[in-house]
Image (cartoon, rainbow, N blue to C red; front, side):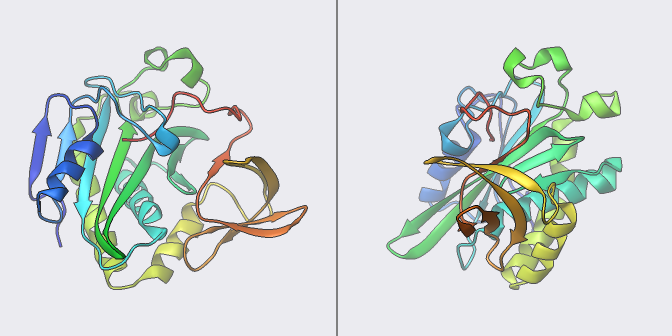
Length: 256
């Protein structure tokens, strides 16, 4: 299956994920993409806003109809973006579980996967990808400057959103076909290589109940986070791994 053969271009929308979810409910085909020049209400995990100014970033969503739900999907998308950026720009992008894209220890972008079910049957998955492309440091709101980065800040030149998107579609198509063929082990091995954290590294993990400190042990076969804490080994399906400079309180950050 080839992603991006049909692209719906929008000058502006509230959220590419929201637009594509509406289209999915109307029976839109797998692989279609919504690509916007700006988002007025872009969001990420836990409902956080994603800074989405016109001409500065890549804001897109992809519709998939996989045979199964899996925590590997955002990781798969992260691997695809990292691979595309490595091939085109020779950049080493790290994947921070479960959905962040890290460049030079700062946040380049993120993934937001939203699934819909008909009863117990998976109907579709919308994968939102937000990537900082052409911002200078001063373009980011002050609270984001210590932790945000763009391709332009590294490459010293502008990147065209549609060109970057095309590279991502090629890579994502390949990795989605691997996922559909149940190549989970290949995805996990690649995530291990690209992971921002190494086994044994101390991390702070944020869940609804509050921060959890422990040692990163890796991911299990389902793509879940495994952490050694003072109370024993714990497995997480959702949450957020924080870097030392990030606040423990939700800020203005997110994904597509």
